[in-house]
Image 1 (spheres, helix red, strand yellow):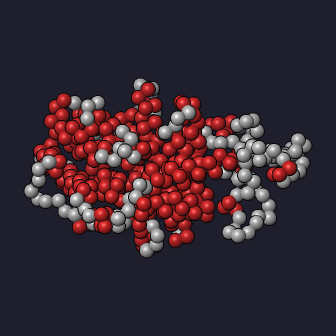
Image 2 (cartoon, one colour; image 1 turned 180 degrees about the vertical axis):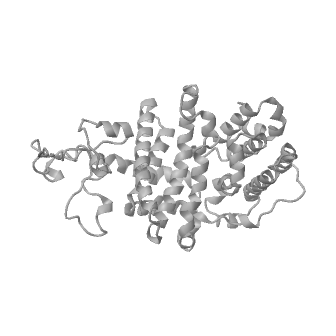
Image 3 (cartoon, rainbow, N blue to C red; image 1 turned 90 degrees about the vertical axis):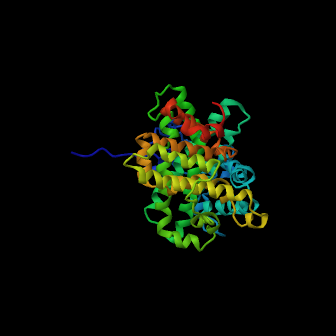
Length: 406
C-alpha cells in the first residue's frame, strides 16, 4: 500500500514551529498558545504560502510589533544572513525598558549592586535567551503588582509574565543538562530571577486558592507552607555546586557572597527579646524523638536573626561592602541551611516545626516592603495559627506581635 503524501504546513505560529508541534493556525492565537498562556506570533507570508514575505520595511510585520532578527542567533558585530523569526516583540522591548528603569532597582536598592542587575543581567540574556525571558517575566510581573490600568491590565501582565516564565523554563531545562563554565552565570542568574518570580507570583496564587474555596489542586495553606517554593529554593544549590568556584572567582561573587555568616554563632544562654522567645520554643520538642533536628533548625533561625540585626549598628563604610545581601537574603538563609529532616517534619505539619516556621515568617515580614515579598511573612504566621489552634498560641506570641492583627 502506498502512503499518502504528508504536506507540511509552513504557516504555523513561531512557538509551535520552534517546539515542532502541529499548529492549528487559528488567529489571533492558536489553541496551543492559548493553553500554554504564551504570546502567539505568526511570521508574515503571502496568501499563496509559496514564498517568504518581503523585507519588514515592505510588509506589515513592523505594525504587528514583531522583530525579525533574533539577538541570540547573530554573533556580535555581524549582520545575519537570514532573518529567522524571533520570540521577542516590540512589547518585549518595553518590558526590558521597564526592567532597566524600575524592576531591577526595586529588587536591588543598593547603588553598589545596581549595575549588576541593570546592565550585566541583560547582557547575559543577550547571549542566553532563557535568561532574557526570565528578565521579561519579572518585569511583567512587577507591572502587574503595580498596575494602574485596572484589573484587565493586571491580568494581561500576569499572562505575559507566565508566558515568558514558561519560555525561560524550557531554555533552562536544556541548558542545565550540560552545565559548563560558559553557561554557569546564565544558570545562576536564571535561578535567582526564578526564585523572585515564584515569590512574586505566590500572592496571586494564594488569593486564587482562597477564592476557589480550596478547589485548586494546590491549596492556599500548601502554597504558603512552601510545597513548591521551598524545594525550588533549596534546589539552587544543585545548579551552583558544579561551577561554584568559577562563579566565586568571577563577577557573581558580589551576589553569592554571604559575608560573615560562617563566623556567627548564637550564644549558649538565651538573650532577651526575640532571641529569648526563639529559645523558649525548645520546650515544644523537649520530649520529641526529633529534638536534634529541631535544635539544628533553631540554631539556623537564630543565626538568621543575628545576621539581620548586625546591620542596625554597622558603620556606613562596612555596609557599602555588603551589596544587596544585607537586605533580603538574611531570612531566606533559613530555607537554604536548615536540615532536610526539618522540612520533612514541616510537610507533616508537626507542631514544633510549624512553631519555628512562624518565627521564620516573622523574619520574612521584615522585608515585606519588597513587592515580591509583599504579605508573605504575615500569610505564613496566619496559616500556622490556623493549623495549630489556640493551645499553641502562647508559643508564637512574638511572631503574632510582629505581623500585627489579621
